[in-house]
Image: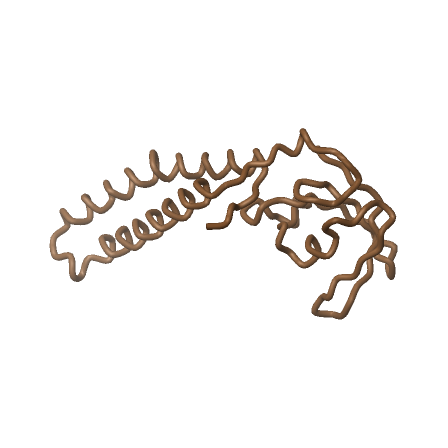
Length: 157
């Protein structure tokens, strides 16, 4: 199996979610199923079927999180430096056509959130700028056509 890169913060967030699912949500859904069973005929008990469905989602998510945490390659970005774009870098780029500046941190897939300025290491934008340095130009093939960017700044926080 291939290792899954993630930041220390991303790893902690997945562990917190797993703990929440195992210690809070799983016991709650078990209790909800027990209560629904007491209502009698299970074949026509919507409450029971909804609780069982939710239990399936919770158990699936627990398995997914455990798998990701097992395969995690935790990278402490605060110990990194340099001018080359790589996992964990916070990169400021400028669109060549619009002169619009954007800043993104390159993180693991589960941490990505464009609203927070975090993009996945597997995203087309991240892949296009990997191994580039400050002052380098690169292109990204987007649905609206190819877009050119210049790297203005690379930091590690």
